[in-house]
Length: 153
Length: 308
Image (tube, rainbow over the protein chains, first blue to last red):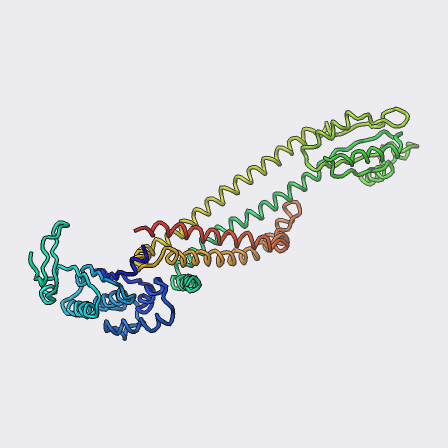
């Protein structure tokens, strides 16, 4: 089971960062758990933080970050093990429009680099601006599946 | 791979211990109390045992011989008695020695000393003091003395009296008291130890309850059970070691302070001397119980939050 989890990166609405570890340690932890070597961790962590644009806050603790910054740490943690798929469960639910836009841009960048991203959201603007495949669900059933969908109730 | 994991687990255990300093402090303090209970039980049982053996040594059977008994015969009986498996020691008090002892006991009583001088022969017989290995065995020794015909060479009895039957009631009572004190002591020991272990278990469980969210996150990130559980067990072990060192340090002044009181009040055991002489053993007991309680309770407490 843990091996399968390492192939899936997860991002949540409530960030779920380890509160007594700083940004570096939070990301390093998921690499350590996957059994990566120390030198690999030291080179990869700054790299993913650069990718999400958070290199300056590498030694800060989660309570010192804003919501958007926390979510970027969570995304960095999700992608650092190069998973096959990233599941983002309402990652923008707690964020203001500016941060929402930035988070979506990061996820889009990750997708462009070749990782499947499953993004669940209620945000009309996010879906309409992306113009990607949209699956609509209602009462646990898939009711629509559009190649280049828009937000439809 | 395994080595890296183990190293990381130990490192993050130490890390968690120091970063959650306040939680660590309170857990250590609770564990110090538990270990103190276990430690004081060691001391109490030492005092109890010393008292019991002192009392047991004071119990004996005296065989009084008639004044005409030959010393050879008495010494022969002493030898037979010494060969009995129940007998710890038989001491022989000669007629002259018992007269000396008697004179010494009454050295301020002129009347008795005068009347002793009136007699032309020593009125006291020889005595054998018998100490058994266990107070319950005096009955057997007394029966043995009864059945055996303690006769001199010429066929007349040389034993004037055996004082067991006079002492029987007292000895029986003492045996009962000693046995029930031991029983009560061991029951109390077990109850107290169980209680304090439960309290410590609960404290550690509460400390880990705070981390239940983190355990869930570690799970989501893909950490294995071993990797999540390891640091908590390490922290529990550190609790045990630190609490053990604290407890041993506290015992030093406490036993020093109580040492004088116990050596005067109880039957001659200085608890401070006992502590310093048996330090190695006490160190092992305290440390081992601390580490086992800490590690096992952490192991069990994490298990609850691992499933998801």
